[in-house]
Image (tube, rainbow, N blue to C red; front, side, top):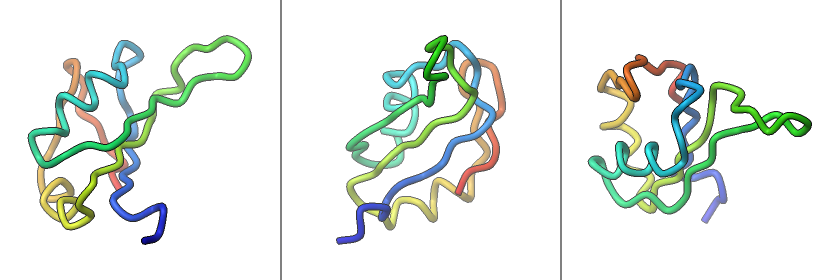
Length: 79
């Protein structure tokens, strides 16, 4: 299995959005194996994007069809 299967880029997330928040939100679509919010290596501040990895890659089609608002911010750049 390709390591990128089931992996989804999430752009434009709020600075307050955590890995747990992403997991809770996207678990509505299927089992989430891993989430990460990318952070600046020096300051450790969030960079406004992250990734979600689903155990079943077929879930991505459904996720991509919907609009998503997390922590009051509409996220984009899904893919």
